[in-house]
Image (tube, rainbow, N blue to C red):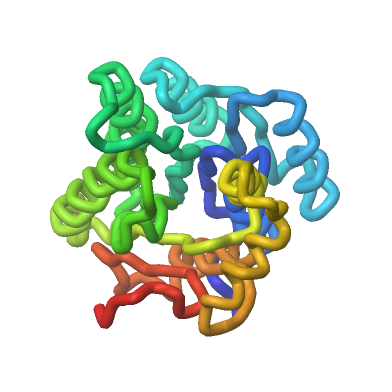
Length: 264
């Protein structure tokens, strides 16, 4: 299936590893030109080389950046447009805040979580929308978490700040629909990433079990009896970024092997 992404230009946040990297690879595989950005330059350069081998050096630009900082967002958007002369797709993806008890969180932690998850997605969207409006084509995709639909113990900072993105993106999708710009959220369940392994490692402390045992037990509770793969999220986002998904907007789509305990 031709997704119509050849020579489309995409910015993918948090693309040095995990689902962000898998998304950048999936888009490049479809012929898109990809700006990858993350805070860790050494890891980012490795992904740049992988994409160059997969497609070509022309298809990728790596920009070390912290997307929770407004000036970094402006830099990434400016440099992407200067290099590729258009911006078609943005994937907002920043790692979640640390776990904490809801009643014990201080104001600074709340502000940091909102800057990291909500403000970053809002600012990046605001920066690219003028280019997308001019082209009358665009895709804004927010990579969030199933925790916004089914809360996870002590992930209140992540859940609350990402719920703000859900509300914002729904309103934004209505505003931009007439410009052929779609806005959607994707919600991974338990997908095998470094962050997921670290979370299970923390959970394993003091239980007499290791992270792998806990992950096997978790997989048994999922209808498909396994954890997800980052590449599966990359493929889903590539589809939502494509011509084929032009009538899908304002939606929240889970990738979780059927684990979500909800009917809608």
